[in-house]
Every structure is written in structure tokens, then in C-alpha cells.
Image 1 (cartoon, rainbow, N blue to C red):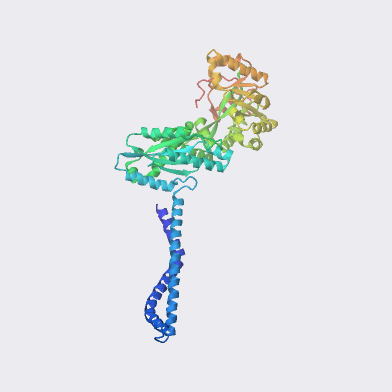
Image 2 (cartoon, helix red, strand yellow; image 1 turned 30 degrees about the horizontal axis):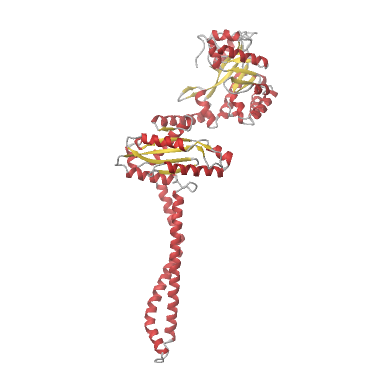
Length: 558
């Protein structure tokens, strides 16, 4: 508030300085006009009777100096009158300009709704004015779902037309005493009074907005489908201090949190604010800050899960899995931090940091052991991804034939052409590429045939069902047969007991991984395991690969 008052004071002083010369000129003109009127009164009383008598031949002509003074006074009075008319017109224009400026300062020029600052002031006044009544207020934050696509597909003019239309519909559906504002972009907010304790009135209004506004957002000329996500908070959610002060900004903030919760839950719906939402948002912000700090401090480390030849039981390689050793949170799994790292744009740096450390670890292993690395779909959108991987291989001297890049089926739907180019570039340098989590996406047989994959990895959701006889056994067997027909080796994920292992062995030759062979381990534990099996690069204690035993007491759980 202090900054705003300071800004207003500066503007007032600048305006005063700009208007100072005009004000001085006006005061001088007024003084001259008043003096001319006084002189006219004095000289006219003397000169005019003389002129009348001289005209009738009863006297001589009046003194020439007095006559000239009278004429000068008349000229000065006419000049003052002209200036008065101009001042009146300027004042009228100024009032119109000030009204336009006030409206522009308080309203959104596109939709005619209040803007954020004027809404906050009006809402605070409304909340304070009705503080002693039986009314509460609900703030409803309204956001258009996928509005960016409207601009991208139809142009910004179409987007402006949609916003204007939505604002008009909102104005029609809201009660007469409600306030409506556009916060910016595709976000609106309204303040609605309702009878205390009757939150069903707000529920009915929210349901009405969701049912009557979505649809073709134009007069038929724009094929645009629009849905809404709503977040609701009431003055009952405010502290007594905020409610007494009419803290509308705090109320809008809570409604905004509820709106983003509605978007996260699937869009085209509404949610009431709950304290847990704010705690979740605060935790999310802490995670984002922690991830950025963790990348800078090297807190993300690779863990390794064994990949085993099911026929011989020998270790064939390891899959690198990310873990976050947070000083505050302890050991955090990838299902927590990977989605957030993708959203905040930190996944590339995080992945390259982990791959670098994994290369250093894997260089100590036997040269027959492979290293599998999962790649985020976000990274696959980078046209330079393949070049970045190849640069890392050269920089750290890691043999490309030992690296297996794993991509998920979801990567294939963003840009198949780009994915094909990157896979081809990697394979041309000796890197192998596997299709991970096969069966959970929508990849087609034509894609499998056209994209140069080296291996299929069957998702653990199918493998786990092998404990029970039924369709799952036939389904996994069909995937294995398909891989055999396409000349693609198979890796089975999620092997957790001997029953599943035996079922897979009956289906043919393949690799497997899962908790049956041990949980993912840090680099030091992997090094000890390989040293015991004689599979370290510098080891000469054994000449043949060691066998991998089921998880035992020496396995350390993640």
C-alpha cells in the first residue's frame, strides 16, 4: 500500500508540474479580465454619457485617452470571455478523459469486467460492509481448460472472442449483486454473497456455470469447445482478522488453490478449498526448490536393479534407477520427484547428471554387463537428445554397445518421425534402444515393425498376473511370441517369486528383473556383489560369470 500511495503522490506532483504554466496563465488572464471590468465600469460611466451628448450635439467629443481606455477595456473583457469559454470546454474534456482513464484503470479493456486491483478493492469493501449481516461471501476462481489450444489453432483474435463471450455468459448467470473480474489470460473470479451456512446456493451456482457455459464458444463460426475448472473459497475460510479487514486477496488465493486442485483432478469440475490443499501446494513448492537445490548439490544418485538371463541365472546387466538422497526427506523414490522435475524443466539436467555417475560406476564392471537407462518422454522431444547422449559417451569413454536406452510407449505418440530419427542415430553409433513398459500404451504393430527397437520390455503389471492361471498367461505368451516373430528379444519386469520365474522360463529365452533377484542397490553394494561374483573389470578371481541368487539376507531394501 505504501508503494501504491508513493506512486500516486509522484503522479500527482508530475501532473501539478505539467499544469503549472497553464494555471499561472489562467490566473493572469482572470486578473486582467477583472481589472478590465473595473476600469470599464469607471470609464464607461464617464465616457458613454459624453459620447451620447456629443452625438446629440450637446457637448464636445470625450477625451481621446478615455475613449481608447474604454475600447481597450471592451477588448480585454471579450478576451476574458473567450478564455472562459475555452476553460469550460477544457474542463468538460478533462472530466471525460478522467472518467475514461478511471474506467481503463479499473476494468479489463477486452471483456469490460473489473481487473484484479479494482476487484480486490470492491470485494474488500463488500465483505467489510456486510460483515455484521447474515451473509457470507464466496470467491469463485474460473479458469478455461486448454485455452492455449484455442489460440494456437484459431488465432488470438478467436481467443479474444471466446473470452468476451465467456465473460458475457458469466455476467448473465451470476446474481445481480455479484462482482466479476478478469484476472488475466483465461482466468476470471467472481464474488458472490450467499446466506450464511447455505453453501448449497454456491454449489448450485457452480454446477450451473459448469453445465451452461461449456460448449461451442461462439456463434457457430468458431469450432471451439470450452470447459471450466472452478475453485471456491468463502469468508468462512478466513481468519477473524482477515474477515474483519476484508482481505479479498487472501480469499482469492484460497479459491485459486482450489481451482488448481480441480485441474489436477481432471478439469471441468469444481472443488471447495480445504486446508490440506494449501499444505499440499506448500509441500509441492518445497519439493521444487529441493529438487533444484539437490541437482546443484549432487543429491541425486543412481541405484541399480539386476537384469538376469532367466535360462542361466547369470547377471546380464543393470537398469539404472534414480534416487534422491535428500537431507530433509531421506531417500525419495522417482515416482515423487521425476514428474515434478519434468514439469519444472529440470529433467534433462537431472538425467545427464545421473547418466554421468552411472557411466563412472559401470566402467568398473565386467565389459559383458550392460547398463540400461530410462529416458523421460520430455527428453525425447528434444531434437538434440541423441547428440547429447553420444557426447556423454565420448566424454566419459563409455562403450556405446554396453548402453541400452529405454523409452516408453507414450514417447511414440508425440512425434514418431522425431523418435525414429533419434533411435536411428543412437543405433548407428552402437547404442541399443528398448521399448519399455510394453503393453501399457498404444503402440501398434506397424510402429514396432517400422521403429528400429532392439528389445521389448513387458510391463510388470502383466508379469505379476502370472501367479494366477488365466488370460494373463496367454497374453504374456502372445507378447513373447510376437517379439520372437519380430526378432526382438524380451525382458520381463516385475519377477517377484519362483512361480512367476518358472512360468516365464517355459515361454522361452529372455532376460528378467524384479525383487526376486534383489531390490535396487547403490553403487557400492553393486560393486561388492560383482566383486564376489568376479564380475569387476579389474578382478581376476574368477573367469566365468557368477550366478545370481534369489534375494537373501545380504540384499538391502530400498
